[in-house]
Amino acid sequence: MVTTSSVSILIPTIARPTLSRLIREIQPQLSTEDEILVIGDGPSPGARAMVEGRDPRVRYHEHGPTKTWGHSQRNFAMPLAKGDYLMTIDDDDRFSSKGLATIRKAVAEEPGRPLLFRLIHDKGIIWEDRAVRCGNVGTQMIVTPNTPGRLGVWGNRYEGDFDFIVSTLAAYPKDALVWREEILALRGVAKNPAWNERIAKWEW
View 1 (cartoon, rainbow, N blue to C red):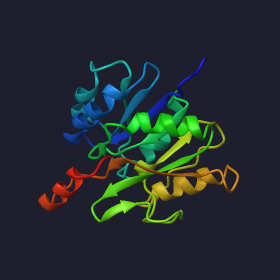
View 2 (cartoon, rainbow, N blue to C red):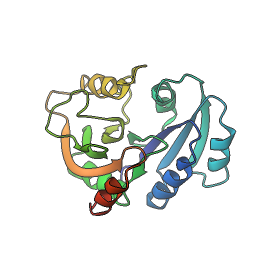
View 3 (cartoon, one colour):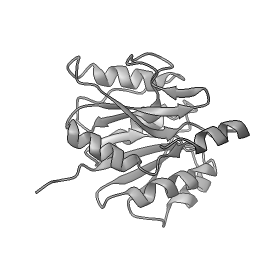
View 4 (cartoon, rainbow, N blue to C red):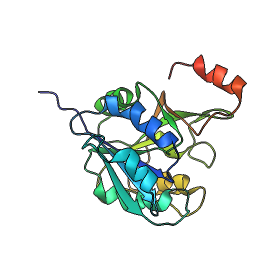
């Protein structure tokens, strides 16, 4: 019998209205065992209202306030996650309609390994080349096994996502990272109409 790995999706939030849209994009893709953990940066009644009563697989937790780009919230949420794999995304991002299917396919092909997907952002697509460096990797790209002792730490600086990726990979053999061509997410809200037209032409 083939088993499907479950995924925990961590969403730090400052209660942006776009949180509700992001949950709507992810929710139809959830399996029975998947979950979304929304973590408020301090008291966030607006975020709680967007989450509670929606779906038992979508849960709200509160942490902070810290104002550390969501990195403290991610560190807080990781021990709460029950999925076989972890990923994280910001509350103003967009998630591919094929995102979880893409992750499951990659996990089936490369079980037990950290995966680095690609990301649309306001200047193009990253990763540009297969190098773990600031500006070439990001929060929304890493999907990693939820393995105690092999999860890194999100740093309390803007580049805290880079810190997490590097510290997680340090717990694996050098060749463990799998570079994936598929795009999982669009970072932030595209404000340029020309950019929106460009995004609309991409399959992601």
